Length: 531
Image (cartoon, rainbow, N blue to C red; front, side, top):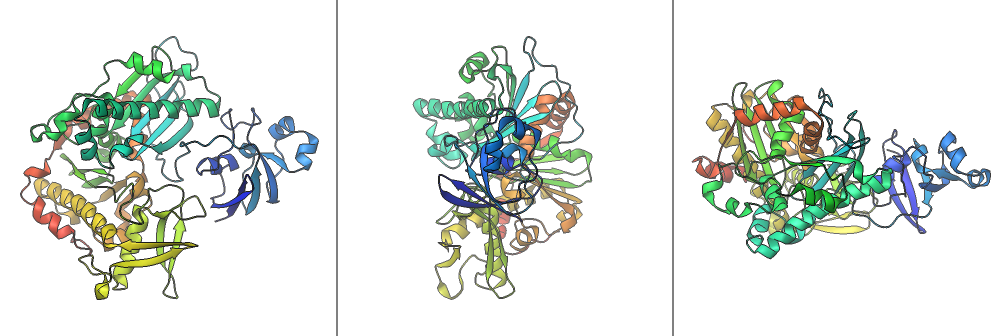
């Protein structure tokens, strides 16, 4: 892929990119954004860069209007008007203040098809827009759309600030036993949603008061903590199969805090039950699991992993604890799948290892998919056995990515083993209760940020994915966010979600006798039998 060298206050940074996007769009996925206030139309003239080398293409009318002849002669360009195709070097002029919000990584966005934007917006708002929010345990995604046309206007992606209270849902739920902590958790999530909306409004030239609907999906714990309602019940086994009420009591106060339309509709899409949240329902809507080939398996890998099995007549669903290995990184070399994460590891012809880094030139660590790749490579080289132990009693595996040195330790591998064992045992439990052999699967949908960057062969080699034909497996990105968008805009999507809610049969893995044995079996780093 072509490489972009970006100078920010004299310091160079190197990014790779796929031709087709504007320079502004490329930079918005990184830590090196440009100023903007016009949806990238060239109307504000704020996203100025200086082209130092490479081919930036012809000057566009918006650049000729916004920049003087001397500016153009000096190499000044508007980032939103350039669509680079080859290597180039640019300097960002007047960079914006640092922000925790950026465009989602390339390939993460999944666009649901066939849903008309036919939900009427609340009355009294000119040019109404809406925000679809996926409140994940680790990350928060916001997609902004015109409610009249359904056109996507902008996206934002950032960390869920609740992470400082714990990396997993159980830790946060336990912390929320104290009322003052529960209030802080709720405020952190609400404030983050408001920040993302404000960032979109400021950078895209939108009026916050035009936001007249906000639709939020998430796992049960995240929704309950956001609303600060009934989250304590999730720590009681009696409620692990029951629906949980976690809608907002005072949507008007949230709208006021966010600065959006006073009459805005604030919708917290209710979870299905137990730890199975509305993010699963949204994901099933987005990929239309019950309308495609059957039998079909849906896996949304995450800190709280959710699984669905569609037999063609029955829909079985469950949730299991994935832990930090899939999303936020675990152990000494783990990192979330964001700029600087090693997301791909491959063996080279000379016996070495090649690393690919996400949206940056400097590696920060291994994200989940990179960890899967590295473990699979070490297994093939017999540097690691099926139990997750290094050969010859070694305690770690040292490797370098560029100038950075890292060490893969037993803790990293153990976290991956436990996460994959939990998911594998969950799949086995659904297969058993449905009486369906995994070999019969015609479709396997792999969702989530972690799933988007998976190498299927490596995932199957260590038993993370079932051993079915690769052609049956789809890596689809953030289906929860895509489904939230469909629910924001479409009555058809809402009707489909209601049908799925009625069809779904929730399985509590704690009550399945085969779960413990299956968990132990899936701890091994080897392919699973698709039987």
